[in-house]
Amino acid sequence: MSIRVIRLHHHAVRVASSAHEIDRARDFYADVLGFKVDPERRSSNGTPGHWLQAGEYGQIHLIGANGHGHSDPQNIDSTEPHVALAVADLEGARVELERRGIPFRISNGVEPQLRHIFLRDPAGNLIELRQHDVTPPSRAVGEINGYTRAKGAVMFADMRGFTRVSERLTPTQVVPLLNEFFDLLTGIAVDHGGTVFNMAGDGLMVGFGVPNERADASRRAIDTAREMLARFGNLSAEWKRRHDVDTGLGIGINAGEVIAGHVGSAKFTSYTIIGDTVNVASRLSQRARAGEALFSSVVRDNLDDDDELPLLELPALQLRGRAAPVQIYCLPAAERINLGDA
Image (cartoon, rainbow, N blue to C red):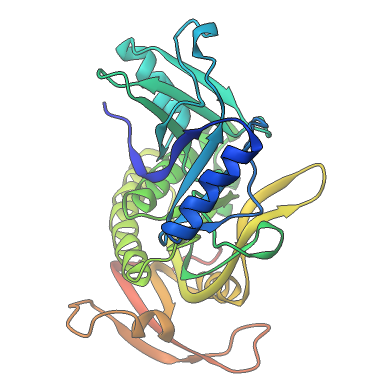
């Protein structure tokens, strides 16, 4: 099994450790190459340097260090020039490296969950692996307090019938079903380029083109919804055979501007997305029946006219908390199920 790489996270460049040389390198990348310095981002291990925005998505990390790899038993020095990759499952990557017998070193960031894995390729080049959905690979320079504004698509997917399932089955039976449910849906979302921002109860929230914008974010969300509805239909049928329970999937999608960043308190924070776009997607998910995806006209306008999708235009829907009705469309599965609870 190979490690699933989601995207290039950043490229690290080592420069001399003196403040003068560090700033001299920064000025070169800024003045000559036109990169913008990210003033909000700092090195997690306290090593001096600068982060610069390299184009629309990637970043360059200038590391002011003289090298200290000889003290590491694996001869791995994280201040060397290296390429950093964001992976779908960092813990799974660690297990796979151990299985293959590839030497590596784990380095912790400021927060315990922000782990980095360093390894070398056969030619000796240093590679860093990071968890894709823990911290954003880059952010727009100049955003206040580390929050990023981005235009993307937001999806909520919720299981229908879960309350009855919880009443009929024991907790030891319910937990494996939830694990199957989330494993299926998160795998589909990541395969289509989505970022899972939240899993709670029997639902999840996924962002597309967030925090790094993509022109095809809405199309990716629709493709994800179609695959989720089809494949969960098969899983639901299997649960029916095994446990005699009826379940379905309801999905809501909206597109527009969101704000991404860490939200919470001093004792607990999570990286998430907020805004009216998110709220509307959540409301649409609540209104979707089992076996269908509801999405806004904003999403529809972002799709190509020649897309052969089985879309149904529905009457405008008055959503709770909004003054004006929302024009919506429906993407139905092959079969919709009438389940009373969400």
